[in-house]
Length: 327
Image (cartoon, rainbow, N blue to C red; front, top):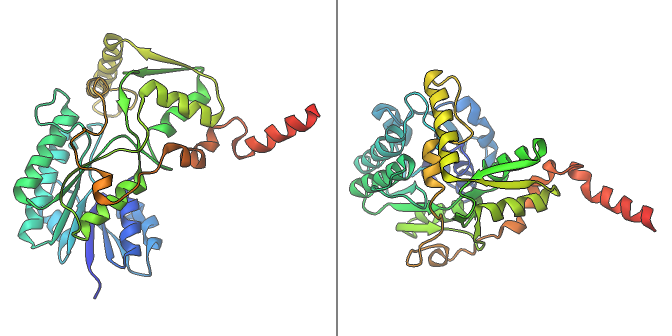
């Protein structure tokens, strides 16, 4: 019988790419998610019955244990950028990560891959970065041979970065951002998935920081995005105090509404994160150590941002038509 991998958060942005690659490797794939009915799109990644979504809440021991029963490998892709209700940074990124690692060790799982983020630091003033760091510490304590992946900002068809700002550019002539000078090293989501597969197969362990071949400022990335979608917009980097006020106002609205109105614009904690560069450390292990060549943004962004162009998929045809009229 083929081996089995359980991927917690396997229907998410990164998880789905790992699931697809593991299915191609011939493994059975168990997608552990809170809403299996919303993960049915993963089933065609493999042959009939090869990929199976199952119910799981990482805040519950029994649920996590049941999802990994009989698994040869485990991948934890669960993480949040925004706290809502019981899904707090501590509950998901510390306690949830520790629970998965402890139970994986108890169940005799052979390999464990944990998805973290560049900037993870138990001493950080950002709750997101601090809990990511504490989560890493808990994982390695319970499962010392685990593989920890720390990607920079992720890009790909379903990303929540370039898609978000490209959508804003369709509606507004001004793009306000926080931390315009902060450096990022965007990494293609499928490259991160390829790295995770190395860990699942037992070919790598330890901590790896993953960044693509391009390093640019937040404002510079917005410029690249605008060039791809063919729109001219004013990118305004808000002063830190102004960004903090915007974040605080959004957080207060979310709190007073009991979470009914989520602050999906900019949080106080995100302003703190955006004040620090998000690039691979000079002495960190990375793609080169895994034998993977990272994909540049220019090779991928046009493939999915075309829908934000003025004429969408017909942009090139419109441009050609204009040139013909000039002849």
